Image (tube, rainbow, N blue to C red):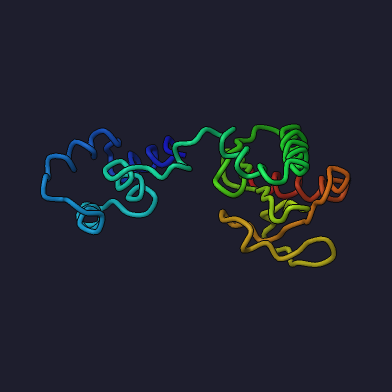
Length: 182
């Protein structure tokens, strides 16, 4: 994630993280987050790129320093029986073509080189939600409203209580989300 935001920073400003860190350090008088954010905005750095530079200066949250395995272990520590569902979704999605998997603090996202197409969130102790980005599709049947499940344009979700719930219909919907996001 840091790498992709760093690449955005270069595209947005023409300079990398190291260059900006040196420039911020040279300012000296920027002693708090609010001042740094204001200064960065004045210099055309906004959004995730600004967030990254603020964390570079004032420190990263623990969950951003954790390894993917540490994040996944934390997601499933009190519900280990649900971890095989995530693993099955990842295996199936990997058969569609190239994907990136990003473990987050509370969910795991699946991305094509273009954008996020799905996420898996252990929502309760007995269920994970397979969240999907399916533009132009409304909730109905197994497809539930998923707008609060994860970011990245996710709009629908399917409740999965076991690997068996990842049936042909669920796989077809996952594939459809993947194809629409390539």
